[in-house]
Length: 319
Image (cartoon, rainbow, N blue to C red):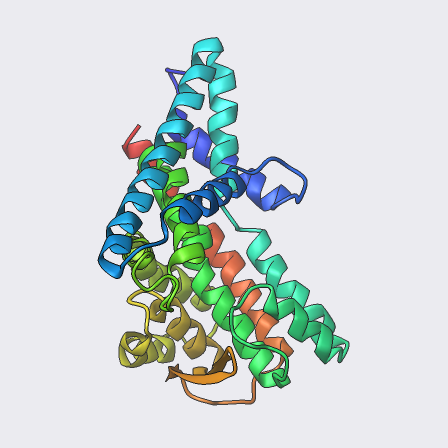
């Protein structure tokens, strides 16, 4: 394997496997193991006064992220020692497990299907699997909004970021990123339990997604251009609204999607019975409906494929 661009091939194979297979529920998944380790360490570390918990939160992030990188590297190194082809396959498999190029649009489909059939309660339940807000009384418009926000934001941390880090540093760096993302999803909350303990995990996730979130603007606009959507309007809305998002990264893909589809994202969400306002992005050019989910799925799919060639180019350059 030394005479061919090893990194480029592993990224390509991992990407293609993700597009073909997705996320089979019964397959061994490294990210599931990372989640179990985080849960175990949180039980051991998340106690004591606030300052102590902040320091332990830093320790948690360092242990989990560096451990994920090192374990992945050791496994691939050992596999290569047995046979170069085995190392290649395992490296590609690790990259495959970090990507959500098929499972993200599939998640949107799980909400879309009952919406198309008028099964509002089922659509609310399916959306609740992907968002932390209360979905029990959402209208169709708000179900669509929650789905669009999920698809747009997770395009970055579920597809673009792991692909970027896989191209930059192979499977070990992609897995380290997934450790960062998993930490944020498990302990990166601003509440009594995690405000101190999870602050460093949340900041690390912001830093890790910073560049990919801004690259997402280009790929989504290019995807919109191919589908003859109003790219100039979306760009103007991105410049106007993206900075209003509470996340330093989330406003980039969400504002572009809002502008391309002619809908408004953000607004009032209910968390634990209490309303919270998120800055609006985009202009209401039509009432949101399930057709917007279909169009957003197309945007995400084409933007995912458009991001592959630059990723392969980066991997080839760094080979």
